[in-house]
Image (tube, rainbow, N blue to C red; front, side, top):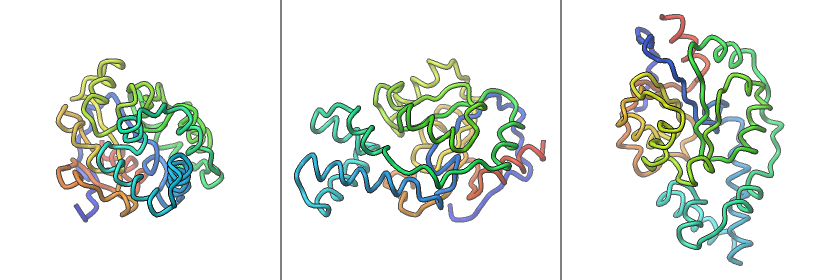
Amino acid sequence: MNQSRLPIRADLTHVDTWIFDLDNTLYPATSRLFDQIDVRIGQFIAQTFDVDRKEARKIQKSYFREHGTTLRGLMTEHGMAPEAFLAFVHDIDFSPLQPTAGLEAALAALPGRKLIFTNADMPYSRKVLACLGVAHHFEHIYDIAAANYVPKPFPAAYDTLIEVYEIEPAGAIFFEDIARNLVPAAALGMTTVWVRGDDNWVLPGNEDAKPDFETDDLVAWLDEALNGQ
């Protein structure tokens, strides 16, 4: 999965629900926004468990790999309540995010409804969408709380999404930067698009992903997909 595949002859006429991950998908990983969150997660763990940054990093990445998110690891292994963690790690500088005409136009052109599916929480998601200037395009934000704190890539999170929003998977397309998070969506029958970004997100389970499409430029992909209809 190392070559870009744009949908030159893709038939997306069946798609009536467009589902987008948030971080490093709706905006490029080059904004380094998630780098700030990554640092804040390490700080939270170091302070909570009174360990140095090296040990905190080890805990952080171990939980991320094994539990889908560091938060899920903290909840499972330590019974931690999520609210304080989420408030701390999302206290960042959002200034790298700016509205772009390309993203606005691409989302406006999509037929059908549009949803956000994120492992982040609602306050953070709303801030990101506001900074990008595209909140008005999305019917719902399906955040980690709505998923009962079960993160991607656990299938239960996808099952709840489908049930709550009455999604027909065969008519849905899912955009995501972490390849392994596409696997449950594909198993349900969704069309999947891997938005490639930061190599730091190469994780166990990514090798199981066989996305229908790949791109390193979401707006270009959407433009080409729609122009090809």
